[in-house]
Image: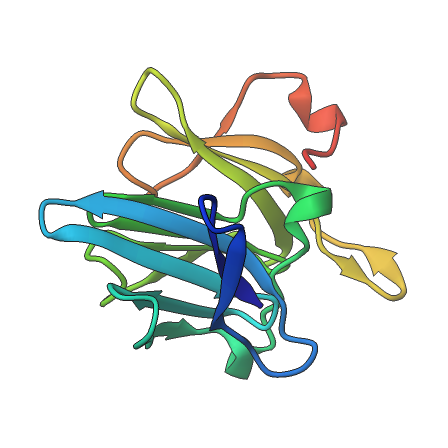
Length: 168
């Protein structure tokens, strides 16, 4: 659920409630010239936005492809939004849109992604660790920190030696 809390009256109101077991894993407020855009990303991979916290628009539904968004409590932020850039880290890779969610590119299909951030050098960084198949660890070559200098269109392995550790 998503609630709004009024500090002065010490009351809260229900803003958004997802279906059972589809928890909201990320919430982001984007400041715009027109006001604010509110974004939610659910466990089952539904990215939604609203300008009034009442009417919600589905921007991307990754559930049909079996994409799961890991818990932010364990794996950090999975949602990065800046201007027209939207980046999502999932249990099965990274989704990137450079036009506010209208078109998407998909990267790192066999890796779990988390902690998508922009650094002072204006590059995007993402932590990757192997996707787990019940019988084996897959794609160990994708572990570590990856960097994009073109808003997520292309990625390069970053910082030699970090690949020995899994990014959480």
